[in-house]
Amino acid sequence: MKMHQSLGPGQNLFTGYGEGHVLINAQRHDGNLIVSADAVTAWAAPDFAGLAAEHFEALLAYRPEVVLFGSGKSQRFVHPRLYAALTQARIGIECMDTQAACRTFNILLAEDRRVVAALLTI
Image (tube, rainbow, N blue to C red; front, side):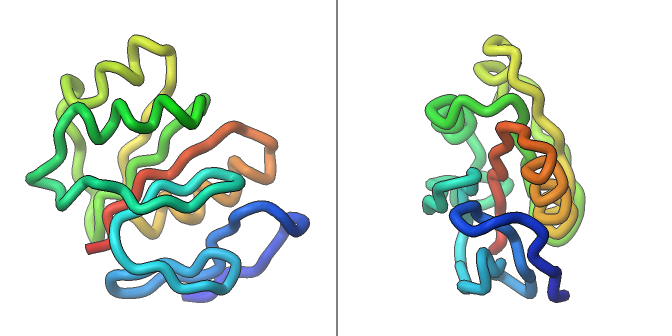
């Protein structure tokens, strides 16, 4: 699916997604990612079964107000003990499939929210 840009330059926007990848500002990214308004970083999380608390603790460095966890093709929920550090820091976390996380990221970014997407694309 292709999406249309609605924000100015200099911000990361999801402009599309497909099997095993996402497009950010029309540039293809494969693999699991952490995406903020101004950074795209590989996420060390191997897959859903391999998620650990340290994968979510790494998100604290971005100082988000909300984290969108994209669980891949289908919506899966992470056990709360894995994201306890986010909860203790009063950072919200929403679990959704990766495509929904991409769309929601763009909306929250347009609202000037400090949002980070932690995405499983593989």
